[in-house]
Image 1 (cartoon, rainbow, N blue to C red):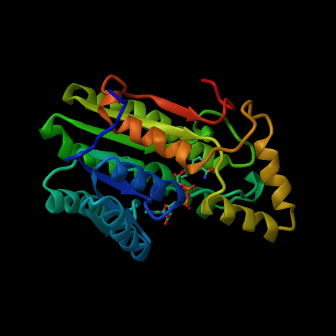
Image 2: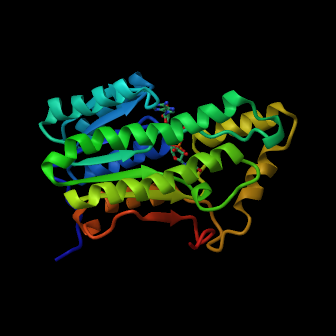
Image 3: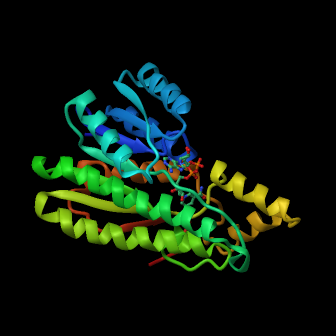
Length: 262
Ligand SMILES: NC(=O)c1ccc[n+]([C@@H]2O[C@H](COP(=O)([O-])OP(=O)(O)OC[C@H]3O[C@@H](n4cnc5c(N)ncnc54)[C@H](O)[C@@H]3O)[C@@H](O)[C@H]2O)c1
């Protein structure tokens, strides 16, 4: 029998669904048959994606607008998934922000923005998901981390801090959820030139630096000698959302072309 991942009959919630990884992951899960609530602060893009998923994959899809920093909006998002589809089996929490402000120039607002969206947002999303999953004694949560959750990048001190938080939180939430047969893991991508990077490169250009050289420098030292693709990352979200990951929890999986090995 061919190896196949089927999520038929499952409901998945994806945050950051309008972004590069979120959109690719939504398409990957829909191709495996999951019904989806796709959420982003960009509601128009989430709506368009939901219609696209229904047309391309024949699944049911709905859109949600949620700022993951606001706890009540996060709870309402999870409620919408349950109200719309009657269940919630999978959460892929992908929303995040990144900047490349020099450490000595960073303001309190720069720090707060990244810690709030990346770390506090993960806290609220995992918490709201578990409130629904614990009574069902099943569920899969996959958080978005980064290679910056494993290695201290001097060019991105606040971002690194926020993503180390995600690694630790994933372990703690996994321990909390384990008695209820719920798996909690995270994915640590290396580098993909999505809009998150384009915005950071614009900031670098604005301060008069060579943005292309900056980006190229980040590709140095990758043993497999290439940046990742959004599909490289989406495949891992699919795997960790499936029954093939039933005995994995608390893990932070690197997809960095070998750049990070621990
Ligand atoms: N691109 C990379 O190289 C890379 C590497 C490692 C990790 N990541 C992580 O991947 C995730 C997604 O990034 P991406 O590369 O797809 O970037 P992206 O900018 O294309 O997507 C991010 C999405 O998150 C949404 N978002 C931002 N703030 C939000 C908030 N407060 N509430 C809800 N949604 C919000 C945005 O609207 C956007 O659609 C982030 O967590 C990022 O840290 C990216």
